[in-house]
Length: 312
Image 1 (cartoon, one colour):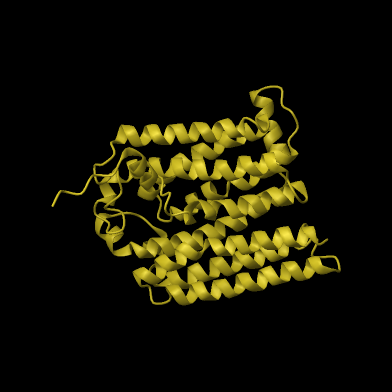
Image 2 (cartoon, rainbow, N blue to C red):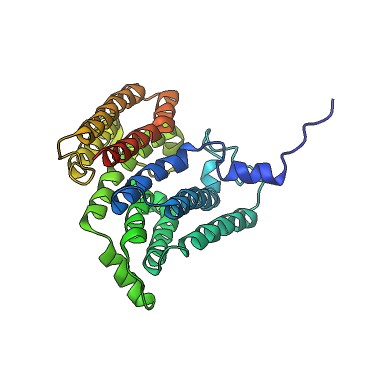
């Protein structure tokens, strides 16, 4: 019997960027699209929709490349990550970084089609993204840094819709800060709560391995408070979204919009309860199932935003 053929380069690159695991980029996509709809007060147009969908997928994929290079010496000691291409020696560090650079440049090219202020915001987003692998070595709850990185599409969506033309680099950064309203920063903070919830559940999957190798995670820091923390963060996220967006999506006025938003919130609460049951036993399978399904909560709230705004 002949030996199995090693995977080709394309297959390895797709494995590197987790192409077979779309939950990662969906977790970023739904809150970004919700922000885009709110900023545009409805349909944002095909151009911005394409930019933010493709850009989200590209940047998450580039982040996977950087993360796998940074964590390659740790990942070989973790059951779930030992087979990743860089860790397994199937892709070199240089090749992985090259793939990540190409993907990041493609995302940047998309941002260039928006406005100078959003381009300036994308630079800040990239810096925060690159800091995350370092945070896992220095910060007891690196999920807080990830929460900021994973939520930065929200202010960028607002600036893409609202920013005025900028004359230079300094003017672009000034326009970016001016174009991002308090509502966007509130949504960023609320979304960071959700990131803390699902990424802590994710960290619970690897807790025994991370304890052995000395990796810092919120699951380790929280100890026996991990399950209450995850559930509380997810519940607060849904509650805060309900309150903060009650007026912007039109639910404060009589009509079908109110019922569309209330239906979305009710479905989101039901999902929070389901996630609580999944992680309550702290089993690997339960925690991983919760993480993989968390994007449906974001999709539910996005559907509520779109539905409510269409029915105003």
